[in-house]
Image (cartoon, rainbow, N blue to C red):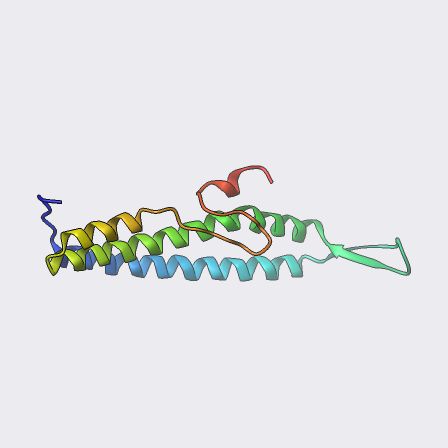
Length: 136
């Protein structure tokens, strides 16, 4: 750990800026999820006469939007958790550095680099980026 030369004020400025961008990204992701759900609902349903007078299911557009969200939801959650871990870890490591604890700084840096665990309801998958891009 010798040889560290950290500009703490510069790090905190970058973390502050990144925090603003991360919040904007999180807000956009939440809005997208709500908008996809509303669009899927507003796209209508398929109605067919199978068992009884009528039965309805999600329409083609709604079904496609639901599949899109299911497919990419894991990756988006992973990105959010990885961003949060990285920002928090950098802040903790920098704080430890400023108070003179290089061992604590190294521990914070190591913890921030660990893979985040992502558990989406019903997905049954954990960790790792890129899983949403694989076939379902």
